[in-house]
Length: 85
Image (cartoon, rainbow, N blue to C red; front, side, top):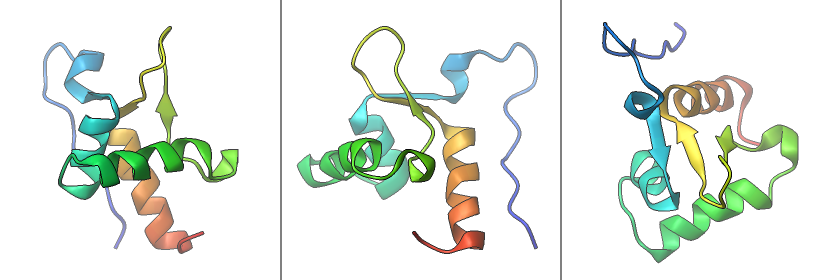
């Protein structure tokens, strides 16, 4: 049984509806809380893993980590199927 990303709301879909901005928001999404430890985990995922293993984070003209919820769910699902690296 495969994992499927839930659909985004119908109607006009914006990036903001699916986007997490900053290590704090990403930490809450991945780990359920925003504290120095979970933020550091996010920074480590973004910088210390080999590029092909990193989560689908991106930056838009600044130094703020961003991620789409849907892409993170797909990344986690792929890790579940393929095993942790």
